[in-house]
Amino acid sequence: MVGIIGIVIGVTNLTGLTNYFQPFVIYLSAGNLALLIFILLIVAIFVGMGLPTTPSYVVLVILGLPSLIKMGVPTLHAHLLVFWMAVYSGVTPPVAMASYAAAAIANADPWKTSLEAIKLASWIYLMPFLFVYTSILNVGWNFYFILTVVDCLLAAVAWEQP
Image 1: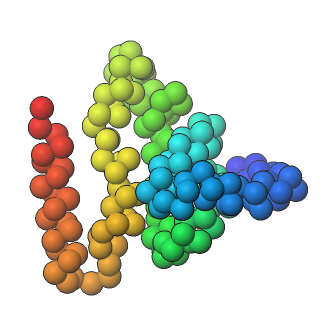
Image 2: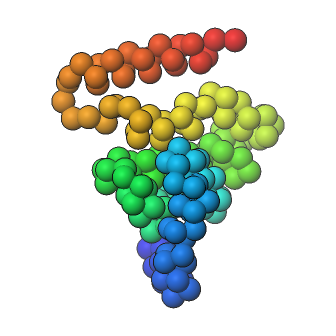
């Protein structure tokens, strides 16, 4: 796996993709941070299609992290956001390795299982926005942290209601 990561890093550096991807993504988002996060979510789905979590995270750090930091996201928040994006490719079709493995164990239809996994894990797609726009990653117990946690719990309960 480390050799594959080295090849991917070498190819992106040799082709200059790392130099052109950051300005291109910022241009596509028109300087809007929410749109930039959404674009990186889509990129993470494509990057995560053929890679496990760790190589996907490394590729997303090389490609997406500089644009997040340039848009003003703190470094720790940007790393967690990119890691979160690398993890959720296991649930998202068409690859959805975790969903397909669960379907094989349960002798169920893989596509129906992945669509149900998307419904159950729908909060996965909202968490990157919470990392950036709320105080959920603040260190220590303060009023805003507790307020954010309570708001998220209430929203989770409301989200799952039919």
